[in-house]
Image (cartoon, rainbow, N blue to C red; front, side, top):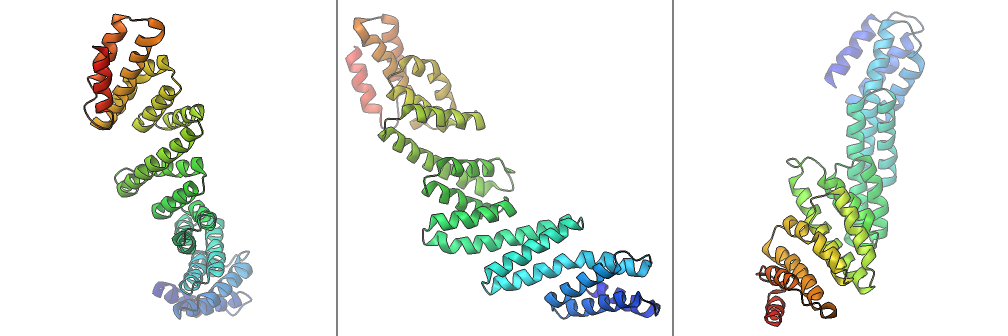
Length: 323
């Protein structure tokens, strides 16, 4: 800001008493207004400098125009910030959007990004009021605008994803969670951890809803979409296998089981998968009086691997029945 004023004084000193002196005078007024934190007034004056001086051939005037273009989005930013501090969100949003548009028009990517970052924070605060009262519809509408301005605002992105999931818009929420998980693992580690936790929670909720409706094919389709986005998804492997098990498609359970088991990271989840595989072999062993020793041995081998979780007793009972 001080550098801006020094330049203005120099331009005023050396400006010739010509038609171009009006532009230089406006520039000095704008610089003075900006120094005194009259950002709205400075913005209007910088716009006049640009409008009146853009076609000039005078290098001093063109220098004023160049500097005006640099500081104009800054002025609108400051007006927007002031409005946001007074919770005048409509004005704050209008001014910050204008700042971003002007910065983009004049090729100032730094100020464009800064304006959008601030704009997203305004939407975050505005949407937060609805989010905190569980008005997820309103929250999602507001957060979506902030997310479009700055998808790297992970706190808001997490709230947007949760709002979608609470509204029953499962896939929209998953898409946001996936975007967070794809961000820089070191920089956004905390947000990624929360996204993974929430993704598992809402996926399990959605699976429970579809199970209650008996829509196993929808669960399989959901799991396969998850695997397309993340081939290493242990959760997707597990819920797909469970859906095939619930459909009594034992051939599919056996075909996919080992891959699903390898993907799991906890003894409980591995045991859950092994139980499904063992139960599938057991069902085939008992089907239609086919008492194949090979099927029995496979059932026993997998059921013996069930060492943790909720299926331990069921596995023991199944093993007793195979003796």
